[in-house]
Length: 262
Image 1 (spheres, rainbow, N blue to C red):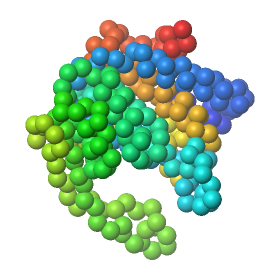
Image 2 (image 1 turned 180 degrees about the vertical axis):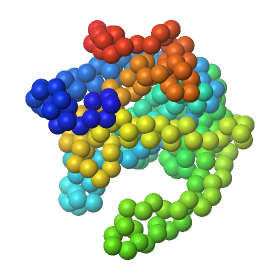
Image 3 (image 1 turned 135 degrees about the vertical axis):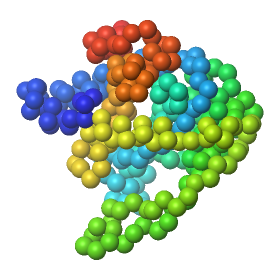
Image 4 (image 1 turned 30 degrees about the vertical axis):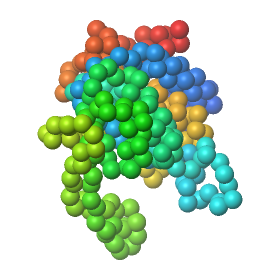
């Protein structure tokens, strides 16, 4: 599952029924969430990048009727805060792309870092209030605002999947004195690619999407626990948790799962 396989492909490879695999993944993911909540604390980060990545549960937002008030289906966003130096994922949250989710995400991030950090986000406006309410003036905060052009119109339906053309980007200082050279979201955007590559349910244009919100939350927690403690980062040559001083060795899956279940 952590290598990006779907439930059914895992079923074919292991000979274990998909319902059993799903129950095990959900139970393990919940344990990993609690493990990360306890373990990733007191992080001494200097530069933190935050971003949100889109996915959906059960059906896409456009397919939901206007009379349906169900927060657990439709569009969901994974908010991620990462240390730009150690590549440690400090905090994550699954929720709607709104002010409430932005606030809870920033509050959780604030509780996990030590000292004054430089924070960079995209131009999502609710971050402005969320950062002010959680960090106050104890942060060097800047937004990297990107400007996109019109989505290109292709023929034969190709334009439907085309990305909007990137035009320009500029930094906007919000609070403190952020270093201009460190105002960037490059590392967190690369983390978005890692998520899409390593979690089948995050892959676009497939039927591998999450059918329940708890399944998505469990898969996200399992991914980040493995990423932080077990997966050797290609450029660091160690795991992000080792680079951040949270552990002194590379964890194998047995250690991760046994520790999370304890």
